[in-house]
Length: 380
Ligand SMILES: Cc1cc2nc3c(=O)[nH]c(=O)nc-3n(C[C@H](O)[C@H](O)[C@H](O)COP(=O)(O)O)c2cc1C
Image (cartoon, rainbow, N blue to C red; front, side, top):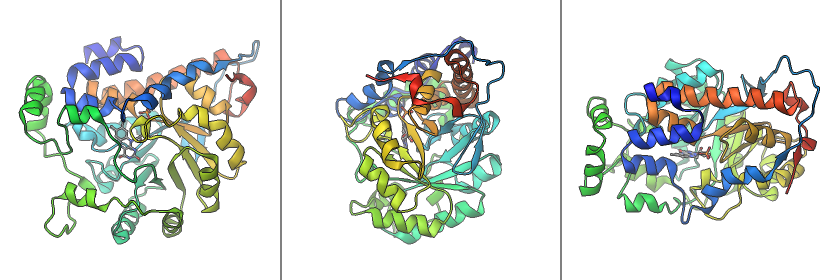
């Protein structure tokens, strides 16, 4: 905790998380696919976009508030869905992240592979929340989950489309890491090296895929069953089906191309979510910020645009918004905070992003988000 106060940015939180987490868990958060080219490009490409600040603008009061897919948010920053958050902090997990998001006034997204259930999150927070899904082979399972989400007060659904198969994350192979972790010489020695984490793990309930715990898997283990549900044959017709049965605010997450963004609009999606899964799926796909201008042009205001991947500072958010995104989403920034210090660490990460966005808006010479236009960014 003490060291949290010395974390001046997301890189500092990352260093703290690295100290507290077993190597395999840190690498699962931190790593990407293949040679990790996209993983590196996502954050680093922002430095090629330069901010053309305006001077002598009245920035006495800065308004960062916005509405995304009908949900009010204190800032244009969404807490992305990430799987099994109790792995990163066994005591806090999703509860810590959902509470910190609510305190910050931001939208919380629960992963379909979360280690807390839809109903548990609803008990914990009456803040804005969305549920993330995949189209699975057995569509009835997903349909039931959407019904549960609706009942529990989740207002938006996110369909993630960049995982027809799992990406090749070589750090996980090196560490012999799986979800749930299997006991072998490597994993045991890494966990023993982090006694605080080990104590938390042993003194809290087992980490499970909480949304599916009561499902009839025909005798299969739950993770094996869920893995068997990933369907390589999913197409736009399935996405359309999902939008229709949900009926409410609906985002398609994992879009890289302008023609796919247009398809999102055609199937009635309310938001196009530009993402390459944080560089965890197809390596050498472009940094998301580089794909934004073409997608904005293709969407022509017919859907909202959310962008994630590599957002680490307020200036990154300003660039994405100036180039046409309605909001950004963040994954690793709050996961590093969670790994470093549970709920306090997540709050630290979210507060850092919000404080730096506010300061950087003042420095850029804009007092509200709608003032952020493309002329503030000089492109490469
Ligand atoms: C550890 C981890 C787990 C993730 N799990 C999911 C998931 O269950 N569903 C999903 O749609 N995206 C998942 N993602 C991708 C994030 O939602 C998001 O696209 C990505 O983290 C954004 O990049 P950033 O980490 O650089 O902010 C995961 C990302 C990480 C780092």
